[in-house]
Image (cartoon, rainbow, N blue to C red; front, side):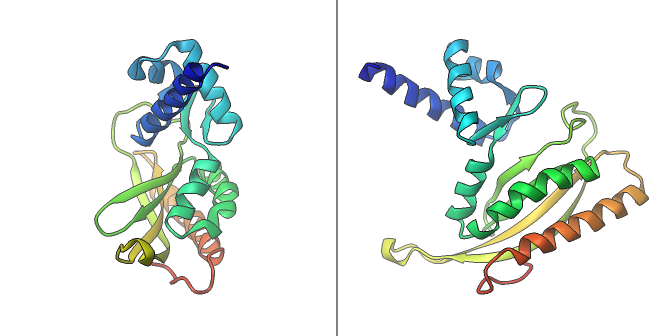
Length: 196
């Protein structure tokens, strides 16, 4: 492949990943239009990113960051030890509760969505969902060699239930959420703080 094609390919990868980082669910065709990429280039790049685990597509073709992207994010914030547990437990939590699930990290100033699995119903807009959350733990990340101050990141698991979810459904989902949050907290090394 000529160097010019490789540069264009890297630029296309960057454009797709940046668009996904904005957090708005999009299809490959929507991303291609927004990024000014040809549809064929966007679909080829998306297929490669999907194969690498950096993105994934749901049944409706909507893209989301994949498990490899979540592992990178968790490692960046000092919580890489819970990546494997997240990969297996978050999709199960979504399926068992019929709720969208998001793993959030907060440093006090900003909140980051590390990974999110949306329920099939959570694309229709309308009324905001009912949300419940459980704290997982806290990690201190320090970069003394670079002169940065130590930062503490609180990890939270959030469920977004249907807006019309009844109290029994909320209680059942909260119990599932608490069990998964406890399992994720247990996957962290002992030198990390407990629930934030």
